Amino acid sequence: MKHILITGGAGFIGSHLTEAVLTRGDHVTVVDDESTGSFENLAAVSNHPQLEYIRGDIGDPELAARVAASVDEVYHLAAAVGVALIARQPMETIQRNIHPTELLLELLVKRWNAGEPVKFFLASTSEVYGKNPKSNWTEEEDLVFGATTKARWSYGASKAIDEFLALACHREYNLPVVIGRFFNVVGPRQSGAYGMVLPRFVDAALEGEPLVVHDDGQQVRCFAHVDDVLASVLELMREDAALGRVFNIGSDQPISILDLAHKVVDAVGSQSPIEFQSYADAYDKDFEDVRRRVPDLTRLHETITHRIRYDLDATVRSAIEWKQAGRSE
Image (spheres, rainbow, N blue to C red):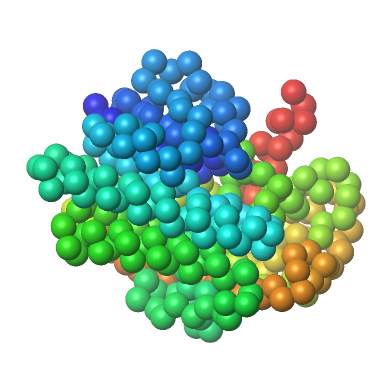
C-alpha cells in the first residue's frame, strides 16, 4: 500500500484519480481549495477509511509541508481551470499554476536528498504548445506563444514554467518526475461552467437550448475519456522509462467543434439549433485561439501498453449518460 497525495483531488480529473488509487488499495490524501472542484465529486468514496480530505490551498507552505512529509507519490493536478477563468483572471492563473508547483518540488527535493523515495506527477496541458502551426504535436515541438498583451497565453506559459521546474529538479537532483500534457479530457463530473465545450454542448442539447459554437466552429480538437487518460497516467508512474520525460496524453481522433456540436445533438436526439458566437463576445476582444490541436502519441505508446478504450462516440455517450442520470435523480 502506498500513501498518495493528490492536489486538486476534488476536481473533475482529480476525483476520478482519487477513486482509482483507492480502488487499488492505496491511502490517499486529497487537498483541494474547492475553487473549481467540489467535495461532492468524491461522494462515492467520501467515507472510505483510507481517504483523508483536506479543504485547503496547497500553496500554503505549512499545509504543503505537512501533507508532503511522508507520501510516496504526489499527483499535482491543482491549477487554474478553463479558458473562461483564464481570460478573466490572468494574474490568479499565473500564481495558482506556478507557486504551488515550486513549493511542492522544493519539499520533495529535500526529502529525496535525504534518501526518502518519492515520485512526482505533474499534470500539464496541450496549452503549452501555444499556437505552434504544425498539424500534430510531438513532445519536442517548439512552444509558440502570442504576445504578453494577450492574457489568453498566460495559462500555457505558466504551465510551461511548471514543466521547466519539474524537469530541472530531475536533471539537478534526479528527482523522479513524470509530466503529462493532457489534451481535452472529458467525461462524468466535468462542468461546463469554466468554458469546457463538451459538457456545455450536452447541457444545451438536453435542455433544448442552442449549442453555442465559438468563431466558425472549424477549430479541430481531440477528446479523451478521463478513464483512458488516468489509465495512462498510472501506468507511466510505474515505468522507470517514463522518469524525467514529458508525454502527450489523450486521444488522437480529431474532430471540428462544429462537427462535435452536431454529434451531440444527434446523440441526444435533440432539436437544439446551433448558434455562433465571436471570441470577443465569449471572452474578450484580444482573445486568440488555436485552430488545430492534435497530439502525436508515439512516445506514449512506445512507453506504456495502455491504448484508448473509449472512441469518440463512446466518450460522447458517456458524458450524455452521466448528465441524463443527474437529471433523473
